[in-house]
Image 1 (cartoon, rainbow, N blue to C red):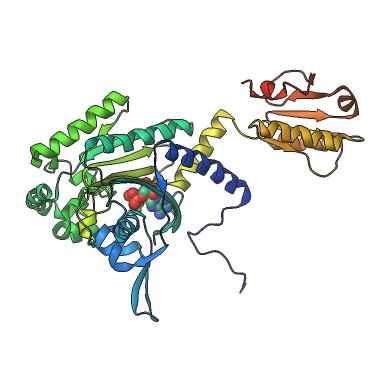
Image 2: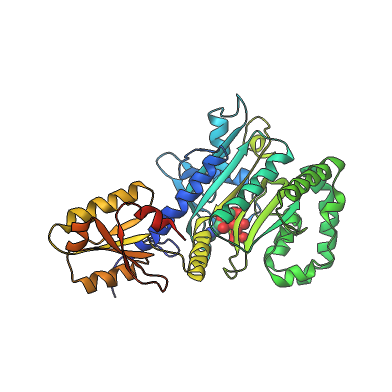
Length: 420
Ligand code: ATP
Ligand code: MG
């Protein structure tokens, strides 16, 4: 038997090629967050198990079967590796009175842990960016959260991510709906799966968002929660929809969308791509006005969302392949007496102007350097030899289109490289 040690199943190393894509993704995301006035908060990876039980809810996939929990013998505490970030973020906000002087826009990022069956797009350690607007009650915030997602997809060059939207009203409205739903489910009990049967009395709403197609089929004529909503809930939802309309964000109403966590109320939404196979949800969120009180804080309205980095980065990668955009702006090939310093200062000059430039490192024949330039995905090679050095020029060779190479002056190169 081999005794080579390996990473835990469902917990992946991110190797340099991929890590570079992560860095680029995260830079885009963080600039976008700053533009919307969100500020970073960092919580521990480990919390008391009770936090997640109370925040996420006992009868949920996460709490029933996905948490990494253990008893810390030294302190006799039940602890859990965080499966999501909202509970910790709200716990921190309460603990440090973050909203005492007014609402706050916060974001966090990092690994989350869920004991699920690993498959493409579903891991046991995965990463999220979470965005939380704490202390805001109005539908304007729900709409802004959704609009900002749409802006990010655009900035990442992603098309085909659709928005599903629903409202799940208040907990009182859901309680009234519950009885009717249970009655309906009792009539369909033989079509429910084990989860459905177990949950129909403890958390019947959760049966609605079952991923099992047979269960979804049985739910076709289920009563509608929307018809049990009062005026306030409906007005809130109408306002969200009309703001989305004004911003030109398209959506599909999905009355079955209830989300996998108990803390939501009113607006809930998911962004879904069809390009990822079964694991198509890249982002989910909604309003959670009850959560602060549920974990011991002062009642505080709030809304937010979390997006999955692995799935989004896979999408970005797909779309790059399709559009063939990749690689640095230029790869500098250099050979001959004195050309090293010329190449180095040229690279620095271009980088200072915001261009991504790779300078060939180590020696190597002209041919092998050109091969490396091609493999780097660079848009062009900039060739520096003794002739170019003497004349203060560079040989510019486009790599991604049929265009002859030509000598160009060193000054003005940045503008040339920026041309589409
Ligand atoms: P799913 O329905 O795919 O299980 P979820 O509703 O459990 O998702 P959330 O708790 O809403 O997911 O988390 C927000 C986002 O985090 C998801 O939309 C997804 O992109 C990502 N995510 C959730 N679980 C995983 C996982 N096990 N592996 C990779 N990404 C995940
Ligand atoms: Mg899940």
